[in-house]
Amino acid sequence: MIAQIQGRLVEKNPTDVVIDCHGVGYFLNISLYTYSQLPQSESVVLFTQLLVREDAHILYGFTTKQERAVFNLLLSVSGVGASTARTMLSSLSPDQVRDAIVSEDIAVIQSVKGIGAKTAQRVVLDLKDKIIKLYGSETQSLGSSNTNKNEALSALETLGYARKIAEKACDSVLKIEPQASVEEIIKKAFKYL
Image 1 (tube, rainbow, N blue to C red):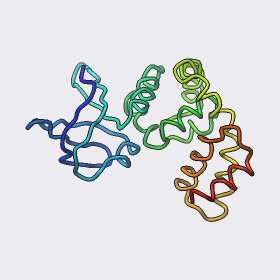
Image 2: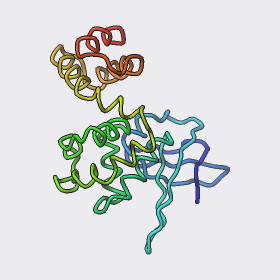
Image 3: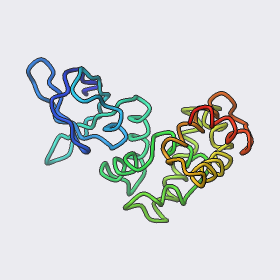
Image 4: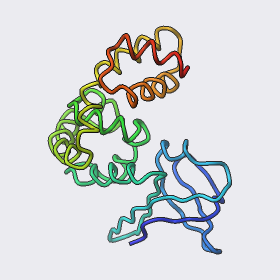
């Protein structure tokens, strides 16, 4: 199996990239999350997952091992294929997917195009214990503060901040103080905005 590819980024599109590795151009499918993390045309390292089907060998690339792990966990759920897993990681960050599963937030998972109520419930049912086992207390604390984070995000959006910027600020606060109240998250998030 190909675990990672390091080389020069030759072509960058929202759904795929080509990486030149010693004269060989590797075509990798990527999520929008990975796309947003990549530089324009520098030397890059992508962690990969090779899926072998009867008619094709398809290589997926990820900027972090965590995103690749979440992708593989999603593939283990019945009814979730590679394109659905990639769509989920394009709509939500790996942390958001993990948090939604741990906190059993079906609405967040169902907000991804192509995922209905039954599939969202199956994702939570199949993966919650696996994610807690893999990531331990780190995810449990993120899951418990998820409601506070969502309320703080809503408040910051109401104040006119873009969701992505507000979310990064809230995440920065929660890394330092995982059990912060909604008010504390909002107050401390202003330092990062």
